[in-house]
Image (cartoon, rainbow, N blue to C red):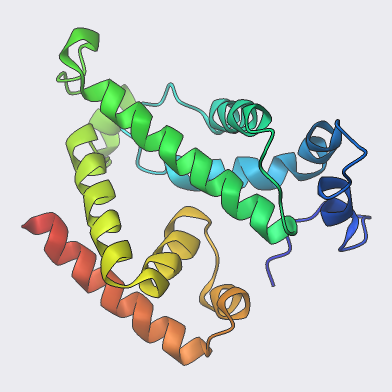
Length: 191
């Protein structure tokens, strides 16, 4: 089961650190404990990215900067912390895609690495990323629970069993919903 917590820590340690009102350095103390987990989440966002200059480390650092600026943000528990962190990384990633598309930055140029030319790897261009963002927003409006499954599977990299545990939904239902989402998103992206 997915357990985004540093080894050797009790399950409530991160939650206790984040919820301590007398500890203004709580976020600075938590980040080193969960850094590898955040980096893995960032890596999931960057799979298929057309530009290899954005690295998981940079995405995690940008997300930390955003979290540090939001002093009013209170976390209920470690799951809430990871959900907020993943959401911030997602927004940063799509912002990066929009920036890549801007003409003044040469975003209309197709960037292909030598490895992609040799291997023929397929990557998502900024237009595709923005279409995906639009489709995900539409899915969220249509059915928030299906949207959550897509986020947990595609962006956090959770297995079906882990998603079932997190969402407290039967494994078979999660698998059925995931299958629906894949087909629905494919149709939306082709339209």
